[in-house]
Image 1: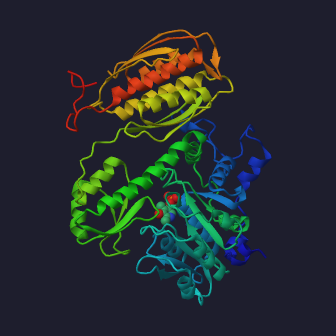
Image 2: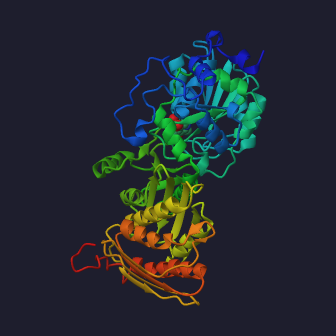
Image 3: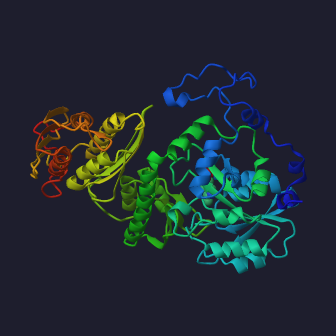
Length: 555
Ligand SMILES: *Cc1c(COP(=O)(O)O)cnc(C)c1O
């Protein structure tokens, strides 16, 4: 008898897996005439991408999403079941293993409230084991508190813990699993992407009584899509999956998750996570200056936990200001959990907590651009010079775009999955459009900027670039190339790149180039453009000079 069979509820054991759709999908390919599921043959009245096959039932466990998530978390596909958020993974584990009226579930408190909710819904017994006064977790104390419990089926431990942020060392959690062999220890890693502790996902694949929960809600910004998973041995995962409804995952959510996990998005997700962690650390430091905040806990999540003396007064103030921060009086008297937001949101929260800032708004933008030919994600930050990570699939063009960012002095992350197997045209043009749009968004109202730029670098090749960030698109290009290509890059695309940038950015761009060597000539154009852009986007004068540089008052 397998481990999961021994622990499962008799009702769940008696259930046939609901796999009619999975069997039929496996038997027929994707092109079959589908007259078997009472679906509507007409696509829904939704826009383009949204309409994707929503008239058909989704695959219960879409192979490509299982593949993408197992790759993301470094496990094999049969170690993972995709669920509607980690919430759903919590529920199916409880439904599959906890017998109403008999079985118990241990929860470390204070923690995420959903564990208790689902245990009670199932009619199970909740056993609370408090963290210590500093919210630290001790494996020995946890095990000692539970050693004599009969029918203890599950133990939920959250690391980093919500709401207190504590990270628990993996070896402590493994010790709990070793000491409680007839209990499935469920480690909730909903926030692990923001932490420094390693994941237990790989460990859970080799240990029957260890399961890890993951979600795309927090780190990948997909809370509304409801996509998470449980990771464990195939035995335990298959048993838990029996408690799922027939078609748990909405097609639109599957598509959203596939797009979020696509290679074009990877670099920006990594950068966002890094930024949230850096902002969390910065805010923790700034909050030290608050007259009302104490005991700040800067843990491993995308949030901070701290206490205030007069929570009721603060609640009234926050309500008046329209700022939502989670009060967690059960975790600590006057306890609050503050999620890290955008710069503007963080500033508003800090101001409400008595930390004045008055920094200039950030000049950052993220743009995605998806067509049948290219999938592109771009992030620019005009006030930081790093990171620069460019991957268009056309190495010479990567180098050229890097020249722009390096010489203009801004951070640029740009990834493209394009139809370069045909040729580089779509990729080159669409990346220029997306970059232009990102620069436009980052410039916002264009307050305080230099607006004009001029550059003339000389090697044996000479390029002259003039820029006016006027808001009005205009592009002129003088020059010609002998070679048709440099690597995979078509030289004839060079004028198109500057036209696309001008159109999307809203700028007049004049480029003139002369010289002998085409490689040098193209490179000189991009370098000179970067140099000119550096002047044009620069904030000029003192902090107070935030006017729009036009007598009209708008650009
Ligand atoms: C947010 C959260 C979840 C639930 O995430 P979903 O995937 O959105 O359901 C699970 N566990 C903890 C600790 C959380 O904070």
